[in-house]
Image (cartoon, rainbow over all chains, first blue to last red; front, top):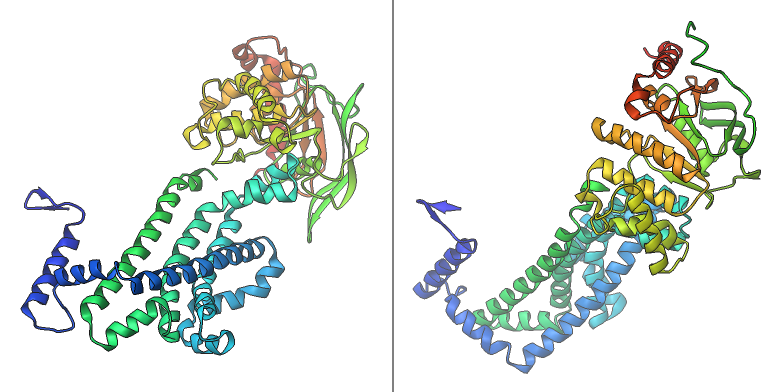
Amino acid sequence: MTLYGYRVPMMASLLVWCVIWELVGQSGLMFLVPPLSSVMMAGIAMVQTGTWQAAALITLHSFAVGMVLAIVVGVTLGVLMGRFKAADELFSIWVNIFVSAPLSALVPVLMILFGMGETTVIVTVFLFAVWIIVLDTRAGIQHVPNSLIEMGRCYGASPFALYGKIVLLAALPEILAGIRLGLVRGVKGVVIGQLLVAIIGYGELFELYSRSFDMENFWALTIILFVAAMLMSAAIEHIEKKVDYYAGVR
Amino acid sequence: MTVPASAIHAVTQVAGDVAVEVRGICKNYGDIEALRLIDLDFPRGKLTTLLGPSGCGKTTLLKIIAGLVEPTSGEVRVNGKTVTGPGPERAFVFQDFALMPWATVMRNVAFGLELKGMGKAERQSIARHYIAEVGLTGFEDKYPHELSGGMRQRVGLARAFAVNAEVLLLDEPFSAVDEQNRRKFQEDLLQLVEKERKTFIFVTHSIEEAVYVSDRIVLLSRRPSRVAQIIEPKIDRTASPDAIRRDQGYLDTVEEIWQGLKHYVD
């Protein structure tokens, strides 16, 4: 972007909003919005506390376990649906319902099923992330050119080699896009899960700070979460860019 | 058909060694009858072309020979053995190249050998030989998207040569290659046919291409497809490419085939 002939650096808009936040905070108009600088200070202090570290660790753990399950199940189911019509017809209605369903409403039910602990949070992460991975994997598998599969068969690929060396790799761009979207949804899932369970990890901290109107810490917590989600998403996007050239020559 | 008999010599039986026999092949897709009772012999060490109007099932027949498509009835025998699926004695060259975009030229060419479980050093030395054979030396570490269409198909051809199959099945290999590269590629193919001494079965819709590269041309009729005519162009292959393209026998054969196919074109 250029403004009056000057090139404006990429992060400039972010800086503008930071300044606006700081000014609104300093003016004291809204007690919900403390100055950004004090939020930052609170954040730096917070990450050094044992409470935050323990919360972050348990959150990260639930998230990681849920995501690994979602990726394994999602890719497997997506491959089955992409390759076999029967599997597609059997599952597609459920996948399409769940991908757009308000899953937060299900968390209380999950709590009854899986108890008030980490299991519920893991299941929530899984349910938030898995469907989009299924759908994108399915689309990727369906886009694998028939000739690549015929090539594998012609040159004597075993079923294992056909999937491991050809089909999964050919569908990689779509699978990665599904995983990236799944990660973002998984972050939502872990926070919503913990908030509704409300006794562990990040959710517990959110509950604590917002109930006591400790806005500095509340915002610091939020910013850390946003940054973590964005970094993960950017990391996957980086890998996606590397396989971008597939699409043109597949 | 009024064409000098000297240029064309219709044959139904092949004298001598037969590599691939097609016997009574029928193929229906639901109600659509694609192939009806095809009987064909493909002589060993020769290049036979399947030529016909578009949509006549040439590619289907080639894929049946490859074992990729099941015939409705009839059978294909390679060296006397009935085909039940793809086999190592047959290699396929695809119309859209079917290269793996994530693999280098080297890995793509060696892929058939990799699937056979051959060690890396061995398969790479074989692949290197055929990469040189198709004129791609220096491109071993390139990826398919860095190559032109013609070069990509050379990779596909090298991959087929590398597995050392006796029968090479080429499905319109030059249709996605631009005109100038196609001519050069056709000339190179003739040299490779000469050098590799394999049985080639070639599908094309280009009459000129068929006459230029073939020892034998099988004309298929419109759906349901049957063998309409078999032609053996009598062309001196030792002449230079340009001389062949001006050869009277070449031109007459092209004309003869066109007269035979013309009534299929709307």
